[in-house]
Length: 158
Ligand SMILES: [Zn+2]
Ligand SMILES: [Zn+2]
Image 1: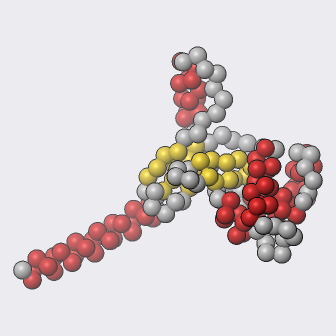
Image 2 (image 1 turned 45 degrees about the vertical axis):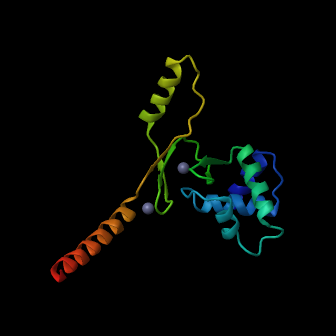
Image 3 (image 1 turned 60 degrees about the vertical axis):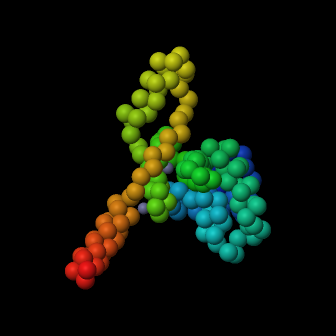
């Protein structure tokens, strides 16, 4: 809790209940990616004056202060996470929406090289790779096996 107040103080932000509650959540789950709606639903219900609008406001302010970061992950989804000080890209499961970090310095230097080759000074990149996570892939596999088995029955019946 002390770290939260110190962070806000350093960012010259008044520790309002919604800012504290939102930042606290990201400190508790430093590797989670949450939409504004998910943040709202996870903020302790006892938090004073914590409407969805105040959560949005707190997110925007914490983002401005660099205490959290955000990433666009396709369609209309934006997720927020604790700013851990490392730039990274994201891998998103198109089935269940799971978001994983890609911490790959080789990728970062490649972004830099691509920009430099076109006489751009690299600032940041927003890369999202879409795919299917191992869990969804496994459940798809077993679904295919199940339908495969059914087809086997059908064929025997013909
Ligand atoms: Zn998945
Ligand atoms: Zn991330």
